[in-house]
Length: 400
Picture: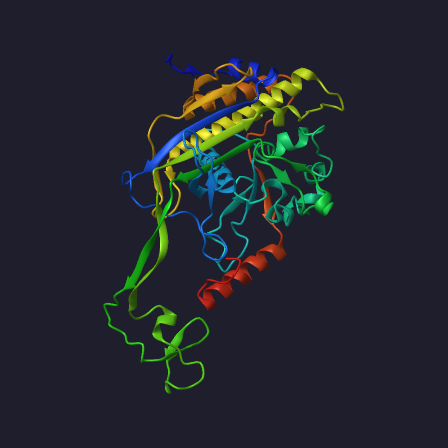
């Protein structure tokens, strides 16, 4: 089999301009502890795993599979990788940033520092950005914020220049002035990781307290603290375990899976990008459209390459390792063998920079410094009160 070709700007431009369907990357993963080592999938409501029967190539019957990382989680990891590259100075992309530094003199918000459009769950349409100020005005009432009220598939220029990742990973402006009628863009980039031949196991839990504090000694909670209960039978008297003291008896419960292998499937839809238009001064230009779509394709591929570079440490006890190098396929002419393409993070950044330069030459803007917002007073108060409540209750409340 011939070696994979290097992905270049020309290859990307031709794919976007032509009739190619998608860039696809399928990677086999194994637990870092070796084949047969247990991994822990994410849990959903009711402490259950997302499991299902799937058709797998080479198998006559459906196979028991379990979701190891969802489409949403994968998108977040790719955006986190982009944010890290921006913070490290490896990459410059348009980002909106809510700066919490100095927002509260008590110091409770110091740890937050900033939240960007790459970190907010709903990207540029998130309530965190909506409830922040630009130049002293609510963001959605500024010229930049008002642009979001008019973006659409036929008019995506403002979103491209403010938050291009929303056009790659999807966005629904349901928190804006139009509510559910706000602009909606589908995901062009989709990725998930699935474990095959899942066999469900158990997990153990226990804790030995070096102080040997006994459950019979009762305590009462106060305002963020606790005290010994004078009467163990009094109302409000609780076990020391409620304030994290004492032993936890050994216990066994359902948890973890073993799998034959895991597979990450990443697809970048080119038809989804071709639906986007980028008018300048009210005029649509085919060359500008192709240039903007090429930048977005490069941005998606760059995000995937950067995320792969960071590895697949999905959560506690779910560290995966690719059995081979990340390799892409370009799905072009039906019936023809897909073109194999090699793309590492460093090359992906170079291709993105070249695509951005080409688009700039045609008039499409590309912010190299973050658009900095400040949290509105009511948002600061909401976060502060929530943190105070969490500190007093010990956390664990719904929504945390």
